[in-house]
Image: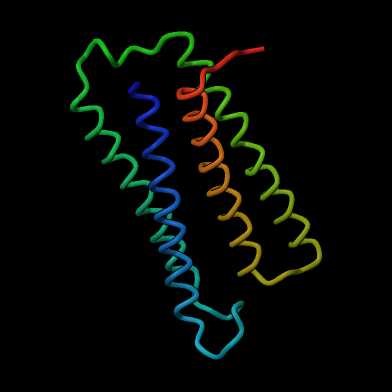
Length: 142
């Protein structure tokens, strides 16, 4: 398995676990009140920070067991990475545009922050899946 494919798997797993943990904490703290009044800032920051640290540590660990010669990227690796990033960026844009529209109509900060976070998570998940699919099923640039 290529180092870049391992990195895509790590990004996929870390994104899913971090967002799931965030949802569990926020939804568990709602109680009887409205969802928009749930404390979300601290769990969101911990989730994002934890995902970043976990991603870095897991990529370092995965890279440590790879022989030096296997770390080199070839043209195919660069094209797959670019393809995955292009695919994933669509959700970053969708999340940003949606959050901007929500801000213009004065939605609560809770909803705006969660749409942005969801956009980032979906971007990471979709981009990682596209990269894994390209490595597993073959990649044919146009």
